[in-house]
Length: 316
Ligand code: NAP
Image (cartoon, rainbow, N blue to C red):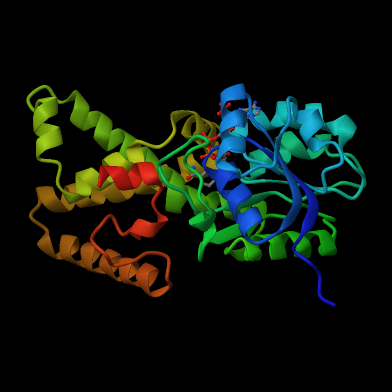
């Protein structure tokens, strides 16, 4: 008989977009005997129970983690070290601790030293999300067809890694195993720097004195509107991502600035050929992403409406 993706007791720490979606996906696939959840506030824990993506709300992280076979840390990355220290004394031998943080080297640095021998530590990152956050944002289909990257640490138990892969696959994800540094560099270019650019562009537009706020809102065309969606992402989460993926972000930002200067130069000197060549190359990349099934060519921000949360749908 093959290995089962099911864990008896699953503890989800952090009950926002990702924690909630994982709870729903685990329930949909019968991947957990019992799901216990913990978040900082009583209101979030109560909402998790009400929406039904957890079976039980714990009043402390230690209560949630006690006897758990799989512990999934779904808080902003900056909270992980303190949580790991608190959990350490109650972790069950043979349990697996994983996380969903958008950066990985910092998680290995902050959490790794607090994982006792006999407990498996397998960092992870589902490359899936929306700009919504909180306990009302999660939905079971979030991971459908999206990649989850696992970055096992040296000496990780193969069976524990395989079981976690099966769990994610049963949640609808495609799983890739990657080295920590490669993860952080790849995500810096595909996710972190684009967010920084969106935050900057929207901030600059808001600062312009000659263009009033009303004009910016009224004439927001495709490109700017898409950037405002990205720039609406959760400030705590993104602060923690940049502070914890410093080297890769700065490296990629340096390359981006060089590239931007080259385009500025081409515009200044009427070098249409350079502009045309650059834009042709990037258009091909967009087509490759669609061909790889990572986005849709639909004009609605490239998003499938059934993948949107109720709140996001209301905005449409
Ligand atoms: P979120 O919706 O803001 O939810 C965060 C949750 O963590 C909330 O339930 C919050 O509780 C809880 N929390 C915060 N600090 C805590 C602490 N010290 N102890 C216990 N609970 C705590 O965030 P999210 O979007 O799900 O993101 C969570 C993680 O997933 C982040 O590490 C992020 O990097 C990663 N991630 C996010 C995305 C995305 O697109 N959003 C994609 C991939 C990975 P309260 O509600 O009580 O404050």
